[in-house]
Image (cartoon, rainbow, N blue to C red):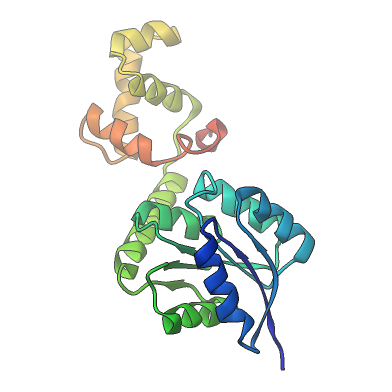
Length: 222
């Protein structure tokens, strides 16, 4: 019978021991490694190449970067986040970065096993208690990404938005970029149309949610 090679990483010794005992007594699973610190994540993934890695993220630093690094090290491994963090934004970042599942530590054993089965099949699993909110947030993020790709800001428009984020006036922006204030106003009109904003405040709010303010500056260059 095929067994799933599991790796478990968690900073709480009792919880880690509980998981190890649960899966260690089940013939469907083989525990290939356990760890309790951020440094263990990369080492275990690199050395043991598990089929599925169950990990906490509260101690792993920036969520997106942590999962992306794990995905780079173990391209075939599936990642299931098992955490006490109920923040929707954290869950969205984890799933967007490559995690296949996100379950809470308060889950029942059947629910945790269901998550492993789903992730093992290549499906996505989210706790039912907040799945609707996470899915809605993922859809919103996808819509924002699509809008960003469709209506990219030119390099000059991006420079103006960056100045806006620093709280500068049109006159200050014009002086900083060595262009006329009239030109700044012209670009502002275009930026508002692209970001579907009605005023400067909405431009700033929209800009904070889109690349390159979470990515590389070239993402908006035409």
